[in-house]
Length: 290
Ligand SMILES: [Zn+2]
Image (cartoon, rainbow, N blue to C red; front, side, top):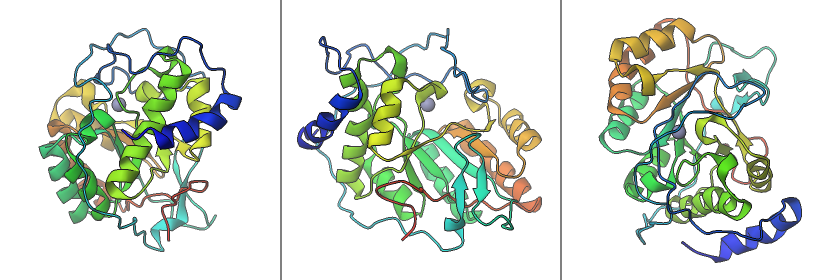
């Protein structure tokens, strides 16, 4: 991982956040865990008592593998007319008279492999522009899929490098978890994520400062598919279809069971008259639109 962008971004952050004098680099015990809560986040965003079991590769295990692509994301004019409401994370038309029969599809803990491919095919068929919230520990294993996600017209989001609980991290590690991933994504596919979603829906004060510095919009979600918990195709589709309404920001994970449930979900929502546009990123360095 390149140090230069990290250090460059650290300098201004030092004035924003109180940096621990006992900064550790990558926490060796920080591994990727399946989300253990995906209920609709509360305003209080209370600390979780759940204890996910670590899995995956320790952060920082980057391969020097690059995908040659610098093509920026190309948004369509129509779809650029939506934004994510920072209060409740729903998808809203910028024009007060705009079509509200839309839902935002978001895919966390990506990219994982076969399920990513299957979801990309379904999204093509149902004209979905999703936000894919990447983790570095997965992205380094599938740089070709990160490229493919961009080529298929989707937006990239930052879901941290190794999916830690942000409140457990010191400031320097928080910066590495977030900025390190943005740097890798930009080096790899030529775009810098405009959206951030904290693991478990839980922000920290330092993470808020880093996200602001990176000019990303933070979002949680308004409808959880509970795909991490239900593990059953019909239960997942029922959960989503029972709760999705105008502007719903639906949380999915990049998993085989989710990819299986997705066709029924997209087909039914389409029949109900919904479209699946992606939002603009109002304050991002790399905006969704041209
Ligand atoms: Zn996650």
